[in-house]
Amino acid sequence: MTMGNAPRTRTGPLAGRVAEQRLLGEILSASAVGVPAAVLVHGEAGIGKTRLVRHLTEKYRTGGHEVLWGTCVHFGAASVPFAPVAQALDNWALGVEPAVRTAVFEGSDELSILLPSMGTRSSDVPPSRLLPVVDRVVQRIVDRQPTIIVIDDLQWADVPSLDVLAYLIAGFRRQNLALVVTIREEDRPVGHPLHGWLADMRRLPGVSELMLERLDADETSEQLVQILGRPATEELVTAVMQRSGGNAYLTELLVRDLQPDARGVPSEPPQALREALLARWHSLSETARLLTHVLAVGGRPTTFETLSAVAASTVPAQDMPVLLREAVDAGVVQVVGDQTYWFRHPLLAEVLLATLTARERMPVHAAYAEALEAIAATRPDLAAGLSADLAVHHERAGRFDKALEFSIRAADSAHDLHASSVEAALLTKACALWERASDQVRGSTEDRIALLLRASRVGEQAGVLESTSSSTMQSRSWIGSANRCWPAPCWPRGAKQHGCMIRPIPRFARSCSKRSSSPSRSPTVPSGSRPWCGSSVQSCGTCRLRRCRLTSGVRSRKPSK
Ligand SMILES: Nc1ncnc2c1ncn2[C@@H]1O[C@H](COP(=O)(O)OP(=O)(O)OP(=O)(O)O)[C@@H](O)[C@H]1O
Ligand SMILES: [Mg+2]
Image (cartoon, rainbow, N blue to C red):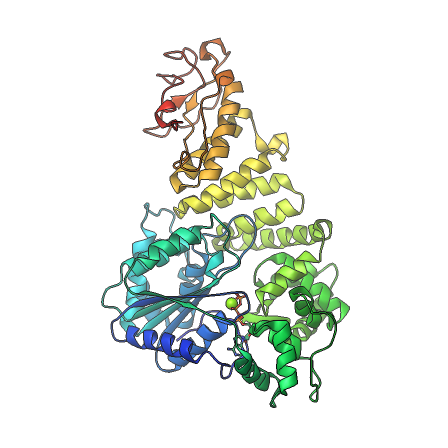
């Protein structure tokens, strides 16, 4: 049985949460006798979502359940497709006997594109096949023993991972399976893909939601007993409640440095969350603080090896273990997997990052880019998965050529995984980077148009209105100044509903016949797409594409007033 990389938060009994544990417990117990269920656990940052789910799943794990745990992380413009799902399955695979792994993965070679534990990567995955393959593999795990799959911090999940969960939930049959996801309330702005996903899931049978509220004074008092190891005075409980409002994490931060006989928390002005979060961090030695800054810039759990390579210019290699131990002992950092470190609470990473200016972060991003490139060079199986991070690090290090190159590589990897929403985000990023890249790397106007058209097409396919509109407008503008015909840029689906009025722009409607030579390279015209060169003439004399009309494929999708 495996716990994946479930964060090693404080263990022991929970303060309060009696009703929540009962409800969740009933659902998990029923799932062990063929009533599959999905539970969506909501709540503000630090309220105790992960702790509650970890506490309960640990109990069920010792009772014979299999627990697969995947965590979503937030880093840069685009995420790695299927990351939490791959993490959960990969950790499961690494924790079981080889014979079990072979039996469960039999006939599922397509998954090798996601799971390093499966060895050689399958080069060709037919469209849309991953979802049923993941479903089949999950079913085989479920057939062995009742299974709980936890996806923590779903607000940061990539769209393909949401699709996997939706596929599993929509396909619930008589299975001993429970899916538990935690969702932070704050990180869900308008337009976030989770809104639509939640609306869809709420309509499906077997889905329930649990909203965690803050702990009340009695429950906070219980939490204080656990932290302090003695009963807390009423005075102290009141003082803590005033500051933390019953948010378990803030309570923990406020009291863990108190003297045993303290009757209240320090009497400075009410502490902002940021100050409370940083209080413990300030107690670290200067070098350990520096190291945690380096970790924060990395944006996700980082291995000892990578962290050592990145920090090499400022932290001597031999000091690394001691410094990390110091940060772990102070409760700032925790070990989240094999030789892998991340902050004890994700909020701390965000707050620490905000203390650095973009200029201060630049050399650290550059060092990450170098370290990750070195890993990708020696571990081809990891290279595709590292491209998105490399794009972010290079961009933030001011290396726009490399950032463009890795954005496109990451988009290609997302394409291989049929993760069109992620591919669209990466292509949109690549289009923006194109402006800042050097001529040698970004190529010709033709390359620019091809990139914009790809972004427009993939954005349309993924239903991403914003990137489709922007790429379409830009591609049309560039096509207007180019000298050949191109497939028609896409109208974003839903443009009308969002009030976007996109129309052909007359000044780009030039005649193809007036243009000089045809280009040396032609883009492949996707079958079914219509050619468009901004020309209003019936047929084009200079390029190979026929039916070159302004109206072709454009007006048919023009939103009405
Ligand atoms: N019921 C509880 N009793 C005691 N301690 C708790 C309880 N709930 C949470 N905590 C502690 O508070 C801290 C924050 O909890 P946790 O990490 O679970 O919050 P979260 O809701 O998952 O936050 P985020 O949205 O940032 O992931 C942890 O250190 C945890 O151990
Ligand atoms: Mg959490």
